[in-house]
Image (cartoon, rainbow, N blue to C red):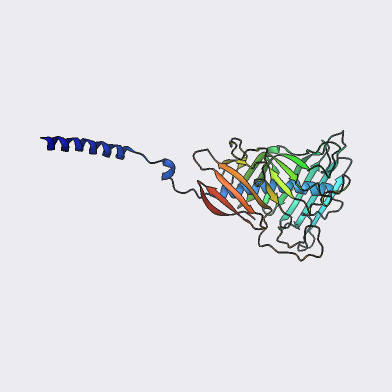
Length: 345
């Protein structure tokens, strides 16, 4: 009798364990296949570069005495008849940078024009140039293209650059920075009926972390020497774990995405003028042997948090542009798994 009671009791416990085990559900996150969608990260970095690219063209064109801009002038292998011209009209307070079938020093082919309307600058400082306190300019595009991409102010929305330096600043004591508030669209025509479209709408800051050097900015009356400039590009967040909740743009897959590039050392995107496939001797040197790089990679370091689509449907990505090498490669981390990332050249 006791044996039967033991067997009966054991069978109840075993049945309960079996029921508990069979009802237990695995974490749906663990059940998902590894997320290896990388193109959204490539698009997001590319859009940051294109916006920063326009800002630097506006800056170098506005302060250029000649059309030989430090980073965007015509390269030696540009086709015959191609040109880059800069015209500043002090009456209308507009600088116009025009490209005609030009291969520029950064290796990109450009056509069309960018206008820099600085009539909205401060009347107190009478700023007319990018480096001056109170400088504020609106950017417009006139049939402007970079390689196969058409750039436009999305829906006619804004593209405004504002110098953040205090009035009567001392160059040797002040790190120059600018606020960039823009909404742009990029379109690449694939066929007569198919096109790739990207959008970017956000606010960024750009700074010259070494602008206190007299080599970069000798004085208020001299233009910035961009050959020596250490360019940094970042958002307003100071917390790398800040909540991602503001839509930055739309990828080529027509998905909304948001980003965080914190204003923190190691996170800010950094640009090096050395990284050019043209082998141009930058950094103010004339006798140095040019170094030829396999691919053009304008941002050489920095990190970005990226959320594509709805939180919870797709995993957050972390994009690392690397340790400062002149290559077109980065690293992407998704759910703790790290993959190599080839960026768009």
